[in-house]
Amino acid sequence: MKKLALITTAAMAAAIAAAPAAQAAPEQYLKVKLTKTKASKKTPTTVGITIDTGTVTKNADGSKNTITSAKIDLPKGILLNYKKFPTCKEATTCADSAPTSQVGTGTAAARVDGVDYVAQGKLTAFIGAGANLFIRTQFSQPAVIDEPLTGAVTTKGGAYSFGFKVPDTLQMPIPDAYQQIDSFKLNFAAKTVKSQGKKIGLVQLKTCTGKKYTFKGTFTFRDGSTATAEDTIKCTQAKK
Image (cartoon, rainbow, N blue to C red; front, side):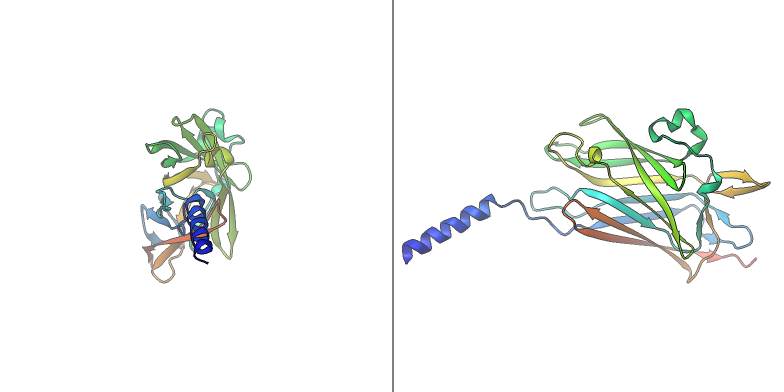
C-alpha cells in the first residue's frame, strides 16, 4: 500500500508539473473622457471622446489573456452621426484615398509571448462604408503589422455600440506567440461636417439622464472567458 501511495503521489506531482500555467480570470479596465459634458436637445453638443482600455489581470506565468473581440456600449443620449461623414472602402489605404474619412488617432501597447519588451503601436480611425469603423493598427516590432480592426456600429433603443473582432495576425503577430493588450487608447476629435446647411458633429451630447453617462465594455478572450468594465462620467442638461 505504501509503495502504491508513493507511485500515486509521484504521478500526481508529475501531472502538476506538466500542467499549463493557471489562467487568471480576466479583468479589463475602461476609461472614457469627453471634452464637454453639457448636453443640449435644441443644439446637440459636439464633443471629442477618448476611449482607453486594456487587460489588467496577469496569469501565474506573468502573461495576460489574448482578446479576440470587444464591444463598447455608449449610453443613451449620446449620438454618433457617422452616416453624415465621408467614408472609405479599404482601411489600409484610407489615408491616401479618402483622408477626409479619418476621425481619430491613438496608441496601443502590447506584450508578446517570448518578447521581453512592450511593443508600441499606432492607431488611426476612419469611417468605413456602411455601418463600419476602421481602426488601422500598425506595429513595427516584434513584427511589421499593418492590420485593420473592422468594427460594426449598431444602435438599440437609441443607444449606440461598436464592436470588432481581432484578426489572427494581431492575436499572434509572430509564430506561436500570442499578443496581449496592455493599453488601447483611441481619441476621436470633435470633428464636424456640414449637412443641409448645418454643422453636425461626429459625437454629440443630446440628453443627460440621471446626471451621468455610463459606458460599458465587454471583452472576449481566447480561452472563451469574458470580462466587462465600466466608466461613469458626470453630465448636465442645458435648460434650453
